[in-house]
Every structure is written in structure tokens, then in C-alpha cells.
Length: 141
Image 1 (cartoon, rainbow, N blue to C red):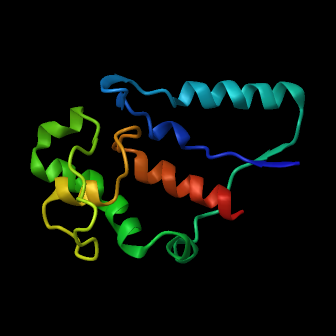
Image 2 (spheres, rainbow, N blue to C red):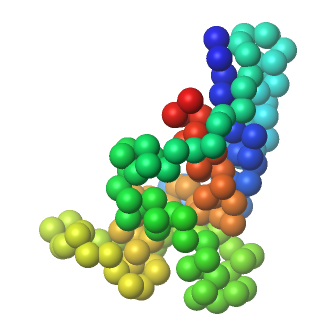
Image 3 (cartoon, rainbow, N blue to C red):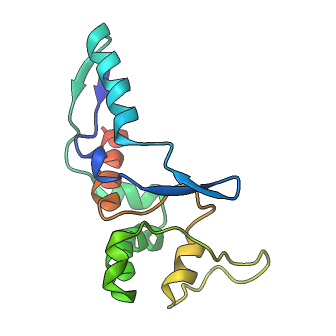
């Protein structure tokens, strides 16, 4: 069995997420994946491979181009609001109301974040884009 492993998964290392109304440490962590990877290595279940470079045209066939573009620039847009945001994870707090238009991308970052999010259970971090594109490459390979 081939196992494609994202070698930069640890760049998406969120500090906090919302869970049942509370801000808690993230459940999904690089350490959790390393635990799984160690178990796979110990058992010799399959051949571990790094993915090739992601084909962004294929990614944009699965996800809308405006969603992919949003993720690509989310961290820079977050820092543009306030450079001290570098110490914080990005979590949405505003979502479009059902029945309102979703076809227009808001200029306000918080509104844009809500447009492309469905909960506060997975933060965006400085390394999310790098980790996500490598993860997409694993799926493609």
C-alpha cells in the first residue's frame, strides 16, 4: 500500500479552536499525526512517499477558485488588519445569513472569512496554506 505523507503538515499548527462554546486547544495537532505515522512505520503497513508538487488547476476543479484564492491570501489579509495578529489564529465569528447573497465576495476580511467557513473548529494559521496545498498534493497523487 502506498501512503502519501504531507511532509509539511506541522506548519498548520493551530493554537485554539471553538468547541461547545469554549475556546480550547486544537484537537488536531502535528503530534497526533506523528503518532499515527509512527504506528504505520512500526507496523510496516505500506510505503511512505512524499507527494509531488500540487496541481492547482486540479485543486480548483474540486474547490472553487475564489475559495482557493481566499485561502492563499488569508494569512496576509489577517496581518494587514493588524500586524500583532501574527500571534493569533484566525477563527471566523461572522457568517452570512441563510437566504442572503453568497455570490459576492465581501471586501471586509471578517465577512470573507465567514463566507468561506462553516464553523470555528479549524483555525487558519501562518502555515495553513503551505500545509493545505501539500495535503492536496497527497490526495491528487
